[in-house]
Length: 263
Image (tube, rainbow, N blue to C red; front, side):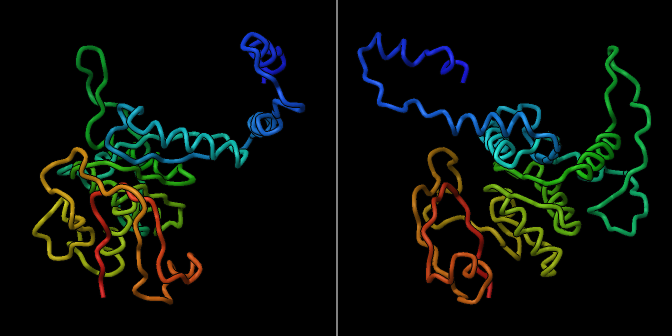
């Protein structure tokens, strides 16, 4: 907007001998975006539960998407970073009794941090656990992004369980969606050891399986890419209704795994 006010486009086009059509440039959309940002007052806290939280650039595309969405919704975005591993009870830890169940653990106020090493106070595993759950409970929504490997998976499942039981909006991207399916299978369908074949090849209930054309040993360049037809087995299911009761849908794929079909 500032460049438009300073006639930057006219200067550049004159130099390059480019004709500017009448009424151009149109800045009304940009002006609306700026107005939305300036008028945004209400804060929206989104918990980002992952395992690369120490290097937030790993989730840069997700961060930018949230920022764009917050402007459109006229909200001030605040991302709450949570290391998924910290949501798992440390070995030897004792959870306080809570009528809300394990996924909504209400920890006591944080005590002072553990003794320092070299002048820097290092929190204990239990302190990290308490802090992670306190942070999760502050969130207006929970987002579990993509990732590879089993590290942090159990903590992500706990975050998905908390969101479902407390009716907190949950958005699972790639692995995050698989996490939601595993959590639902374990805690609603009663498949207590449900898991993904990626994390436990020998598990009885494989909720997530490798796509047939995918290599189980090579990680690079092995994703299924592009549009792919997905047929609805049950025509009256909620997903089919959301898509308008179509026989099948074509969606973009960029995955190595898929939700298993259960009868």
